[in-house]
Length: 280
Image 1 (cartoon, rainbow, N blue to C red):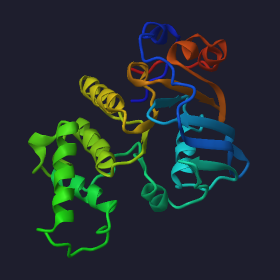
Image 2: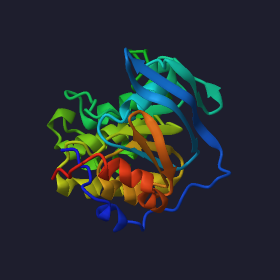
Image 3: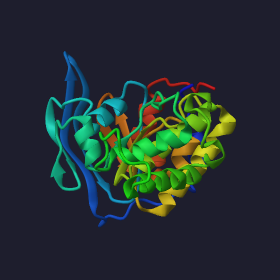
Image 4: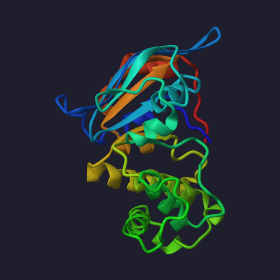
């Protein structure tokens, strides 16, 4: 169930998270005055952001703030009404999702997207193969160098996400927490420059969440991939984030290091003034 705050005390108790992102780091993602209208409803209103490479940015905000819409615009699921998206210096505004993914930007969704009838290993191997020249070559030689490379990638990623013991398990038979790990593994197997994670702990039991936090911390510590995440659970947000961005009613109202955002009166008003209550 989605969690929100009744007060800021939960946030204030967790200010030992990572410090803010370096100012001079290479920029991997930028949006400029990004707008998305659905009829008379403005889901995103002039959002301009800059995400430095090899950092962990989390987007938070009340339900309906426009967080998933922002991810949809960045990843090509939706075309913006106006504004631009640049990834690794290239204008990718309006590119379809498969071309965005080809450029090294991988994305997960609130609902798990896996092949339930394929094994964990097969899910990971297909993800690795999808970024290679053999993406659509169904009769790829099983003893070829490329195929062995995809297999090695699948095995390596399975170990990284803690699923080595379940390689032969049909993905649909996994517990929900392991399905979430597999989904993150599918992104990692494509060796992206950046990952967009849309509520990676959604639907997880409380006891499963520390495992996801540990996994995200390991990915962050490796430093090879930039991560941008939408998340409601503040224990996750405060443990892994370098930078927090806050959306409200489609607008970016604050951004900064976790401690700065927690102390921002505008952010406090966005939650306290909105009459939010915490759902257990």
